[in-house]
Structure formats: structure tokens, C-alpha cells
Length: 123
Image (cartoon, rainbow, N blue to C red; front, side, top):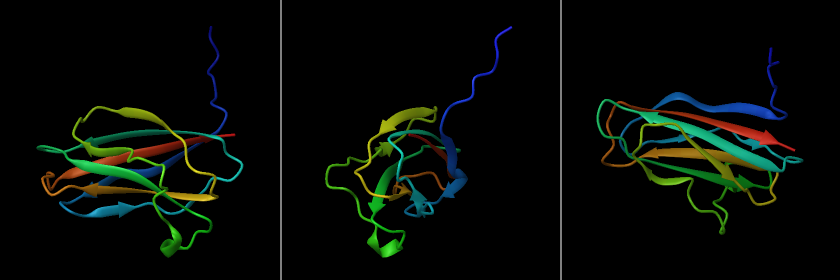
């Protein structure tokens, strides 16, 4: 019988069914990522109608909220996600010790939209 395999790394829940109302932005707590080299994200949105959301990452040299910025070389994780099926992507942050994630419901979003977002980090 096969033995369960444990992933070598850490899985963090960033947003756990967080409601996104039209135009609102959810902001994660800062996440320390020093000494981590590989990152993957899992996310899915759900709604009672049409979903439209933007997902992106910001980074900082410390965990002060006003010091976070979008890296110049980093595209959005999703500029307008509409699919309500689970998505998985690899991300490559700049070498900064802290990152955080943001999710914004776009103006055409369903008022009952929610997001689940997880980060897997590995050295």
C-alpha cells in the first residue's frame, strides 16, 4: 500500500472564503519569505453570478504597510479572473524578505463573490 507523501515546505492560507464586494480590496498580512526559493499559489473564486477579480502581490524590505510596492518586473497574478475553477501558478518574487497579496473585486463583480487563496513556499 502506498504511503502518504508529505510536501516539503509550508502551506499558508491567505484568504479563506473572504468576501469581495464590488470595488473592495482584501489585503493579506505580511508574509516573511527570506530563505525561501520556490513559491506556488492556489486560488479559486466563487459567486452567485459573474466573478471578476484582480489578484496581485506586493513586496517590501520590512513589514511596514506603507513600504509595500508592486515590483516593476511583476505582472498581476490575475488581472481579471472570471473562471470559478481552481487555478495553480508558480510565482517568482523579487529578492525581498516580505510579501503580501491583494484581491480586488472589479466594478462588474458579483456582490456575493468570495476568494480562497493559498501560498506554498519551499526552500
